[in-house]
Image (cartoon, rainbow, N blue to C red):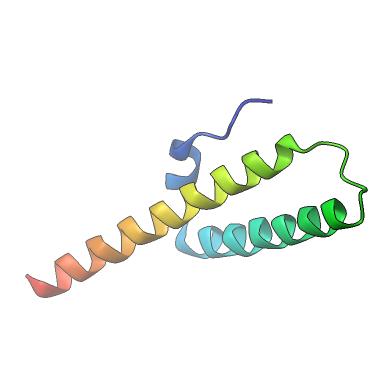
Length: 73
């Protein structure tokens, strides 16, 4: 399974972006719980979820910086 592309995250609306961030954080929590109880079958899912979260947070930060730039001008 290939890692998700950041272009997909950039296409999301602000509301969808926030929902996706919460969903990925919940997924990471579930994965950590499965790891702690030794029920985790696919450890590569950690990498995919962390990568996706980083992409989403990057896009969110870009949008916040762009919004603050437009208000300063």
